Image 1: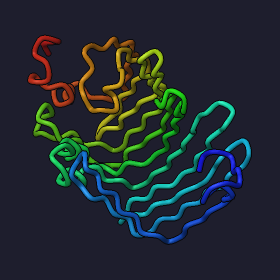
Image 2: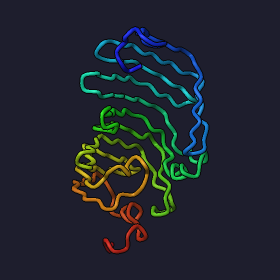
Image 3: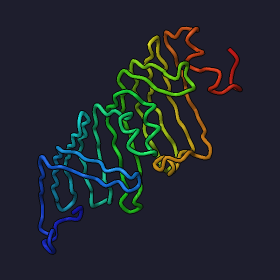
Length: 232
């Protein structure tokens, strides 16, 4: 379908297709989970130099929408995905591989843009602007096992050629004050998509803090986080 219409074969003359209010079921064999959505819209339009379309998926309170375009000249696919009101913690029990999502108990919204090289069949560029609403992060390193958030936002991108994560802006608003981070993280390769840990990372980051209380620092970086980094 991404090739220009040639007029031959079953789909050779097809130039446009639209599907509305459909149901979608995905059998995820890798995770052993079946994902289902009951309200799906999809459209596709083929031309001589490109194929483009839009899509929208609603599953419970979660909503996905976006657009895509495949360009024949450079054999590349650009996909823009917008999402709102995702609750990662709700997926934690779907599969053992997703158990770590239980730590993120906050609504997630944002936009991701990915460019896929059709010749190499790999990601060539990606950017995102993602926000967290009020909620909490659960982890034993925090005092009481919970870090309360008023909100958070991250704008950044990934450069596969350099194995570099660019953090343009990351802010975390806490119950009292806030923390900001910007810079680069080098050494992130294909394991970014597989979920494996990279062998080594090179961080060049600028940290900023605002209106934090000194008494709150042990809760943000407690003793068991890394005992060799500092003594309060």
